[in-house]
Image (cartoon, rainbow, N blue to C red; front, top):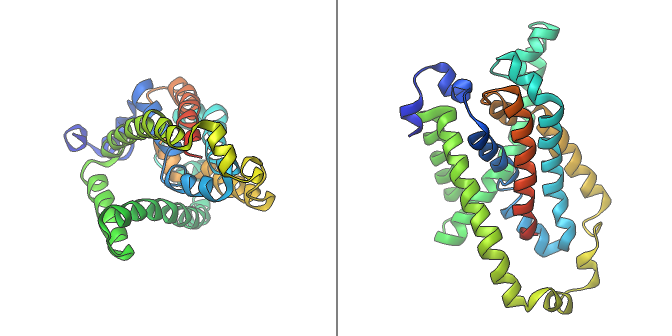
Length: 253
């Protein structure tokens, strides 16, 4: 489907800049509901209790700030990359520095996503971790290359629906029932499980520095902002996505 919608460079890079509220909200929500927040978040919740939620809070805060403060302006520029925007203000030389920063941030981001889908493949199929990473990476590379941003957008919709149904409507009630409700959970875990700072102040600060500030300048999130049909869609679609995705991701912790 993504390939059939891709007719030119604009379609490939930014989905023709024609995503309406529904598609745009879904693709932005998928950012908040990525592997770091779901697979990683479940692990943090199991290990540190409710304080594991700070990872999702940091990611959601970054998307929310970007949407409310910058998304409208970014959408009006009709550009394709972060470096392109910096060159408009600071000249061509700024693109080199921004490219290095983007590379470092993207590598850190890819590490969390790669680790998430590799973990799923290892658990489901018993593969070696290197094989799980290679297969998952190949799948992402193929569908992204074939259909560009349209393929990514449509994949985001599927991801958002599956994770919303899976976490909120299946995992949460089954887990609560198996644990004997919230009272059963309280009886089985230490009091530290419910401490908001149980994961450590330093770790919480690190999440906000890496994810909240990182999302404000990340090419991966800007690429999605570029797809919005109007500045209003970019601004309020992103804010709605954060609210929806945060409610969905919270039970995972």
